[in-house]
Every structure is written in structure tokens, then in C-alpha cells.
Amino acid sequence: MEDTISSIATAVGTSAINIIKVSGKEAITIVNKMFEGKNLTEMPPNTIHYGYIIDENKEKIDEVLVSIFKSPKTYTGEDIVEINCHGGIACANKILELTLTNGCRLAERGEFIKRAFLNGKKDLIEVESISDLINAQTEATRKMGIKGITGELTKMINELRKKLLSLIANIEVNIDYPEYEDAIIITSELLKNNIKEIKEELNKILKESEKGKIIKDGINIGIIGKPNVGKSSLLNKLIGTEKAIVTDIEGTTRDIIEGNIIINGITINLIDTAGIRETNDIVEKIGVDKSKQIIEEADLLIAIFDGSKKLTKEDKEILKELKNKKVIIIINKNDLKKEIEEEELKEYNIIHTSLINNEGTDEIIKRIEELFNLKEIETSDYTYLSNSRQIALIKQCVSLANEINESNEQNTPIDLIQIDIQKLWELLGEIIGVSYKEELLDEIFSKFCLGK
Figure: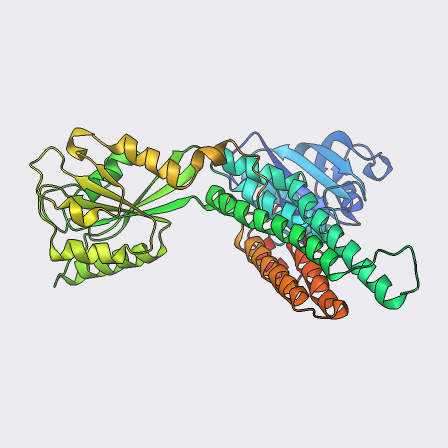
């Protein structure tokens, strides 16, 4: 991080202003070379200065406002200069080019925030929360992102690490200085109580993280059934537009069709699948195979059956696919004479609909809310871990806490159990980035844009 980096920090295109950001030890000196106005090297931090950007021939490039921020009290922990120029890509590109010819290197994706992390200005939870905030498409995702940025998630993890560190320290004192009378003697019972408390907190975080994942990724709902039972009609009714083609011809939907709705601030991804049946049509068969894949991957399945017909062999095959899955059963065509044998569906909660008459969709929405506790999520405090990396590490922590508890119950020597307690402390540190692998950083920061 010895070199000074620069990049355009605003979106490409016509706008009121563009911002070129420069960070590094030479940031102020480099920008001062191309600035006509006050001597920036003599200006105090956190100040804004009016002037012009000029090229090597003293030709004015643009009228600008230049903001100066000095290390260490900056976003990256380094000197930062932000050049506010007029909107339009030509001005921004020319100023960026001048920063490069005067000694800067073009920043890599996410390099500004990466420097903030490496200089101790942000931890990994904050970094990942910033990414969530940038990509937030719902109010719930925004709220969750801001909780991570403000450090509340980090505080929660650090409190657990402090408890473990205190436990480790007392065990070491017991082992190395048994004669030290003021030390807390870590007995099997005391260890059991401490680990139980920590394990309960870890389990709570893990359970709550399921809400975080729902907020961030939404809920994927597969709409499945035989051809011509009303799958496409349901998709259209729920999203409020005619996205899927609806006809009386079986096999009209040959590929998956997706639409989104928001329920209680959560994105619901609806996937209309091809009708599941035996077919010799190569294209339709590909669609059926994709439908079967959706059945395996969806968070919830809405299985639709034609209430005006008896259950067929294909219907019964679909029911077999639903075993041990989260399901809503819909019996459609309530406006026609009922022929379906509901007895064979008695283990499921059934919703009756007549999609042609707009009956039953409100009840479907209500059932989705209940299955995923969406009203509870909407009124919660949004302090959740939310991405796969964080959740995977918390799961490892829960597993390790269980192992520690089992070892203690089997009267394993405390000094051996301490090794696992130390490992648990380190795993929690990985969540906030106290320890990390370079490959992990490369992956995380590559997801940001050039100016972030």
C-alpha cells in the first residue's frame, strides 16, 4: 500500500457532478500539481477549496471543488483528496488521466475500502455490510446493512470473544500458577456453565442469521404442477402483470419464468416452472428437468392441482417430490365442479382458488407470511449476520462449542479443552476479520466497484 491510487467514484454518465477520489501518502502532493488555486499542501484537513484543474501546459481542464482529508482520520486511514468536477464522462476521464500521469495508480475494484480494512478503519462485517447497503433493493436490506456498518454486529461478536478470552486466561493461570490464590479456579462445573452460556448465544445468532439471509437474498418460491393447472395465471396474479403466457394449450410454458414481489419488506422471487409430465418434445423435456431442479432448490414450493379433475398418475408423482419440503398446496378452478380427491392431500394445508375469478391470492400471501414469520422480521432490530461466509463460520462455532461441552462431560483435562476454546475464539475472530486469508480478501473486495 505504498503507492497512491485514484479512481472515478461516481457512476459513469451525464450527471450534475463527478468525483475523482485519490488516496495515499502522495495524494495531496499529486493533486496540488494539477490544481490552480490555494497551495493544498499547506491547507488544514477537512477543508474544501475552489479552483481549476490544469494540465501540464497550464490549460484549464475544469472548474472544481477539492476536499482534503488527512491521515489517520480518514476513510482509508491515508491522506485522501476528492475532486468534485462537473458531470460528464469527458471531464472526469481527463482529470483521472492527469492523476495517473502525475504519479497515481488506477485503483483496483474495492481497493479504497480494502485499505480501510487493512488500516483498521473497517472490519470484515462492516465491509460486507457496506456491500449489502450498496446493493440494497428493499428497506429491510437497507436497515440490516446499516446495522453492520454502525458496528452493532461487531460488538456482538467481540462480547463473545471477550468471554472466551477471560476463560482462556483463567485456565492458563490455573495451569501455570496453581499457587496464585486470587485466580478463579476453572472447575468442570464452572466451565460447563460458561460454555453453556456462550453456546446459547451462538445458537441465537445462528437462528437469527436465517432471518438475515431471507432479508438479503429473499425467498425463492417454485410454482409447480402439471400443465394447464394455473401456474402461469398464479404468477401473473401475484406480480400484477401478464408476464407469463396463459393459454388452454398444455405445455405453453417450456422454460422457467420469474417475477418478484415485496411482502413486509422481503423480496419474494416467484418461479413459474414448466408443467411436469412425461413428454417426447425435446424442448419441453428440458423445461421439465429444470422444474425438477427448482423443486430441489426452492425455499418454498407452491404445488397447484386442478380441482375439476381427479388426481392423475402425474399428480401423484408430483406429490412424492414434495415429501419433507416446505409446501403450499393449491386446488385451483374452484369455479368448476369439484372432482379432485382431497383425501389424498389431507396431510397438507390446502388453499382453494379460482384464479380466473381472482379468488384465493390474498390467502396465499398470508400463508407465505406465516411460514417465514415475515411480520416478525419486519418488526425486529435487523442485527443479523447475513452472508454465507459469516453463517458458515457461526455454524462451525456452534459445532465446536458442542464438542467442548462433550469433552468436559467426559472429564477431558482442562488444558486439552483449552485448545478447542482457543480455536473457538479464533473462529469468531475470522468473522470480523481479525485473521483472514488473502484469497478471501481478493474475493470480497472484487465485488465492489472501482471507486469504492
